[in-house]
Image 1 (cartoon, helix red, strand yellow):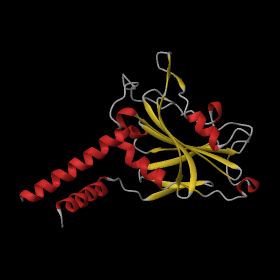
Image 2 (cartoon, rainbow, N blue to C red):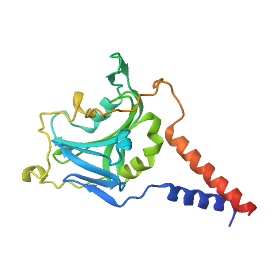
Image 3 (cartoon, rainbow, N blue to C red):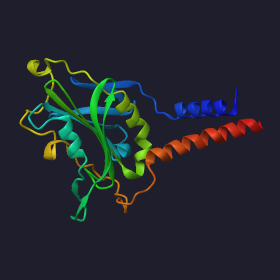
Image 4 (tube, rainbow, N blue to C red):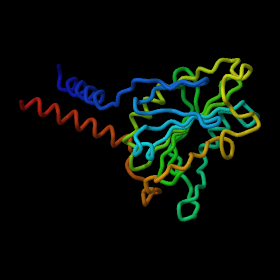
Length: 240
C-alpha cells in the first residue's frame, strides 16, 4: 500500500472513530433525520425543539423544526433572497448589530431541494445558525440548527450527520388528514417570513467578544485536526 493510500486510510479511520454514536432517528409527520443518542426532541405548540439531555450541552446548541401551510409568501426564491440579507439582532447591551451571512445556496438533500444557509449572530449574538427551508406540496418546512460560536466545532459532526440524513416524508394528504401540527398559511415561518426566533437559552455562554471578526472557518479547523491526528498516528506506527 502506498504512503498516500495509507494516509487516506488512517485519516478515514480516525474520522470514523471521532464521530459520536447515532442510535436513534427523529421522525415526525413531515421530516426525519439522525440524532445522537443523548439528544431528545419535544414538541412545543407547532415547533419541535431538539437538544442534548446534558444540561451544559443543551445551553450551547439547539435544533428547531417548524412547518406551516404554504401561503403566497412561501417560495424557494423568496427564502433565498431573505437569507442573503443580514438580520438586525439586539445585543445584550441593547444595541443592534447586523448578522453575518456566511453562505446561501439551493441544494438537494436526499433527492429533495432545500435552501441552505449559514449565518453568524442572526438569532442570538455569538451563535451560528444554519437554516434549511423547503416546500413539499402544501407544506413549508424550516429546520434551524444553532450552536455557540465557541463550541461550533464540538457539534459540527452532529449537525453534518443530521443534515445529510434529512428526509422529507410528509404525504400529499398530510394537511387534509390533519397529521402535521402546522401553522396556518397566513402566518410566516418566523419573523419577516422565514427564520423562527430561537427560544432564550438559560445561562447561555457569553458571546465571543469580537463576533464580527472573520476568524478561521470552524469546519476547516476540524478537518485540520483530523488530518493532524491521522498523520501523527501514521508516524508513530512507522517508528514502532
